[in-house]
Length: 415
Image (cartoon, rainbow, N blue to C red; front, side, top):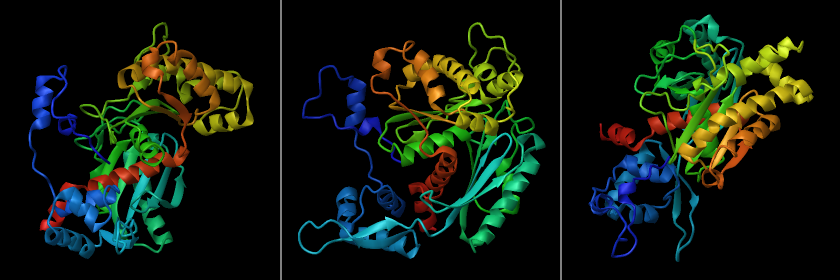
């Protein structure tokens, strides 16, 4: 995951443009120390920015001897491995180095309102094995988390692995998460979960680092890192029991001050009076979520009580279902017009139980007319490519970003 520091951007030429702000110019011309510890070298290798010793030396400016020490320490720690030959630049082909994604496993879980999915992945998010759990959020955090821990242990046994092979755990939940504590923060559709110590609970059974994210954020990061890695700004809308948006800017998840970014399901729509689970009336989720659409279809006599029912009805081509979802999309488009105008994303990914061409059509009908052409001229709207695996893959990659960050590796190899 790369972070662009705007203060280090090249000015372009010996003389700055006259209209360039003086402060920006002053910041841009400041000299900053070059960080070149083993963790920084690992990041270059892990992000495929430099994969040979020569490229690493050119990029870091380290002497050959110092770079050799950095690379040797990473090899000795099992963090990187030799991987064949790189591109020839004259003479013998250089040896390629790569991050060893098979050195350990990540256990991940995508928690939803009525069920959860758990998986084991390698360090690039490749899924090895998945398990479906029929456990509802309404049973409470202790019951759900105990089921997750038991599932992780079953998956380790199933793959002939042990806790020693596990580097970390990642959990995504359908509600806001405080990035400073990893605890749910007043989640409207997670009764009994507010501020619950998910990390501490899981570590009692599985003593490894645990990380928690909002589900839409994890899904957005999965889509960005696998499908749209070059997109400067991506939004993902998950429309299931609730409605949430994950935002990735500059390759990083945008959380806001305390994890509330993207919680569009509780923006109130003019003229709507339906009671929402959060206690307010007229929220987007109260009229356009999977819960709202299922209730509407059930009133028509259709067998619609859950997100899975809606997926089935969509697959069956139910006219009533597609019409209701199209109307839900129109309401979502009203809110997304604001998001698109503020964020100006290159890609808007539609995901969740209601994700369908009918939903996209509805979103388009209101999003484009309510947005300036300038905000949408480069916008691509499409269904999720990773579908149910987006959150698992994204969560695994977020965990790896934490565990193998430059700072963490520098600390680990200096002790």
